Amino acid sequence: MSNYKFERLSAQDNSFLLAETPHAPLHVIAVGIYDAGDLATGAGGVDFRMIKRVLEARLHKIPRYRQKLMWVPFENRAVWVDDAHFNIDYHLRHSALPHPGGLEQLKRLTARISTQSLDRARPLWEMWIIEGLSENRFAMVSKIHHCMIDGASGSDVAQILMSTSPEQEAAEPKPFVPRPAPSPRELLIDAAIHQVSMPLRALKSLSSYPQTAPEIVEDIGEKLSALAGLAKWAVSSSSPTPINGELGPHRRIDWLTLPLADVKTLRSALECSVNDVVLATVTGAIRHYFLHRGVDPKSLDFRISAPVNVRRKSEEGQLGNRVSTWIVPLPLGTSNPLEWVEHIRAETAELKESHQAQAFDMLMSAAEYLPASLLALGARAAEGPINMIVTNVQGPPFPLYLLGAKLLEMNPIVPLLNGTGLGIALFSYNGRLHIGLNADYELVPDLGILTALLAQSFMTLVDAAGAREQTPLPKAPPAKSATGKRAPRKHKQPGKAPLQAVAGASVPQPR
Image (cartoon, rainbow, N blue to C red; front, side):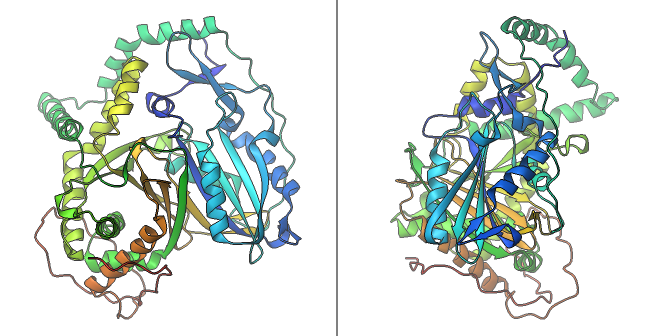
């Protein structure tokens, strides 16, 4: 039958619905801070009417924003259908900070917004326009369920809703003609056809294998080896820590910013990738934070989940999730910052060679053929092997505008899985690396200290690499590939501009 009336959620998208709990809402948040520009109306206000108009004019480019969930009878799976009663006034919210509005007030309001689950009877997104921020600024807090987007598609959405030019006019919205909703009978028939056609689709997927017998054997061997490596983590739990436990209903939100040029300078000095620099910085911050909490980091098997974008060229620009994951143990036991980098570089090199990301992607592809009940169990099991999530998304290197209002910052907030009381998300935008932290209110009561420790950890790496006092070069050289060797090496010091100081609060001295 024709399913023009609806689209099935992929198994990976559906898994985010199954894994969600009342105290672990799985929506992604981005906090954009804008220079109000011509949108300013005086006394800290912004022209909300014009923002609503430009958003309405762009909705036809993001059909999912006017679609809602409909559940297949007798299955724990959902499909997307058009919302015949779509009302933008429900999704677009207008709020203000008490005068004078500061970043701490904005962070507290964002934390409140993040704890409220999205209404599954409506399209799964909200957008909060928050005026009253000091220095003629306003904020946009975008909240989208993870079943709709991952990091890469979230970046695409931001570029659709905004413009690369400050000269932007609000066009007239295009009329919305919703498709008729399917009946439960139609969904049942489609589900039956989907089940019956599974063997044919599985055989079709095998056509992508190499043609010669030796290549088939080698390819299957690599996949089985990758699955075995992934299973190694699944059967063993990570260490209990102060940031792990049952989540409560409340959150703390914080963020900081690093100059992206300085991150790339450090990458070149250490001969590693930007992601290696990020994970080494997180290693130092978490190590010192546990010392601050009275925990010996040497005894911990501390693992992070690092999402990996696996989109093909043909899938670029599409919503939904096309991510795999790396499970990376962090070297919290050593105080030597260069050893943080060596360990992380060796781990990521090994992960690339082991094809762990492809193994996870294979599991999600196989999940398309599994009952939703098994997928729900898998979603719950995935929480055990890790302590936290660290996700790093590459955004546009150029400025974006909303009706002439320049986007100054884009701070990403990753949702928390049950049992993980801290998540760190990074988003590069217009020459800066924005780092957002989401924490359970009780498990991480002193989030500001951890934020400051991230800044301190980065500067510790800068000092250890000798990347501070260097002269600028015309262009940074490309990062070299990882070697996989764990032994410390002598670090070259290519000429670079001095790194800027990072603003941060006072930091407790490591014990």
